[in-house]
View 1 (cartoon, rainbow, N blue to C red):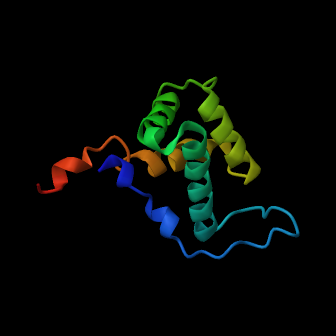
View 2 (cartoon, rainbow, N blue to C red):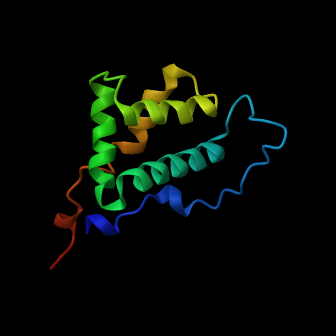
Length: 112
């Protein structure tokens, strides 16, 4: 079942934001849904969708272990900095994206 799992953020109907006047000072919750989607897409494309669970868990481990030199963590921090997310909010944002969704044996919830 793991390879069939998707993020609810991919179902978001949030319309694209008009960034023609530059990046806004703050992002709304709707805009952050798009950031989550783009972040997950970026990681899945780079590491392969079949490795998405382990890639996201590796990101969580890098955050919790404070491995700031981790290449995935550095890349993700770059994306979050581009949307002007303060460094002190990045870990909470990322852990909320990961915890409870990745590293869960969803197969145990499927009959058969």
